[in-house]
Length: 495
Image (spheres, rainbow, N blue to C red):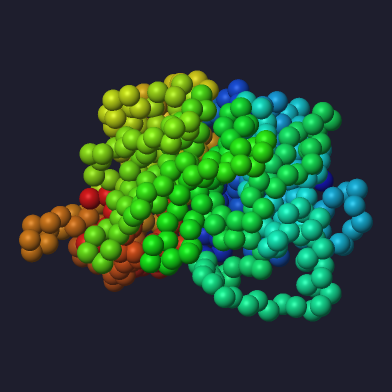
């Protein structure tokens, strides 16, 4: 099970016809991780597993300069995800691949452990495993302190206690759950019986982790949607913390946790507001987040980019005049600006806001952008971007430039030929309001050879059609002779 795999890349999808099998065979790029020195860019790529029943994710290294071909880093029957670099350039990831030093066919093999791939390559080694598996990895940029998101049974304060509770449950033949409070479900699955916890560890000499310590021993369901961030010096973790005590007044605050003592304090809170998606500044003095007002039947929520001073808890709005919905804020490496993503006019685009002046600039004009990762070099940032004619791929931009055309980075599975012509339409409602749509036409459509029309209405109503979708993909219909209209109706975001 090598850590580096220099075997040929995945098979090229068949060029035609554009069938469901062809569509499923296209590799799916998502997420990016950049090494501390900016020379290595890693992405997760999902492909159909050999049994044809599921997708399997592997880690690939891309060339940040956009010149070299992608190179596969990991290979296993179960796949790998959650890439995060340590300060020494080694790569952490989560995988349920079996530990070669453990007994085979144990229950432990079915949950994701934390693996480390040395910077020089070679075999990946297992560095941590907990009974419920690893759900997320965050690393302190300066010290390499590691925060893990894991599941644990209530009233268990260590992984060992959690294992004992899970064994007792299995030995008793218990599979049912009893709920006496909300929440019960999240999207497509029931919650529990475990709760999400944050564990912390240091990477010791020899590549092994120190003993895992629990930072959040009794969180209840407060961390179900947590996306923690850790200060560069590894001393403080900031995480969203949801109060479920009142469903009417349910609120998500930011909580700061001292890594050494576990002491918690509320960093950002206000009645009628949520605080989410935190990210530490390079100097560790500030945290940026998305602060959102509560909506009601007559008013939509209003998000904004909010910066909080870690020492005092004082916050300020960086985008008070922005008539868009910002998401995913992240700092440039010099701390002078923040990069974020927002819907605008049927697109989902990258923006920059100056921390000192609150001046906002748009960095590109086309596509659906995700996962912006600034480089140590102030003249570069990387992102995942898709178009209606192109699945998600890695691209490079200059955070100082506006309305630029990004430089594509060779990404597994691309380029792809699509069976559609894409047009942009704007209709006018009775009150004069413009209504934006994308129209995808099958090849050969003319006024003399019209195509039957299918209409895709996005959900929400707070949402937008802005780029490639793996869930609602119009090319599967255009390949069969349909035209597909994707309108943004009233209350769509980005207008």
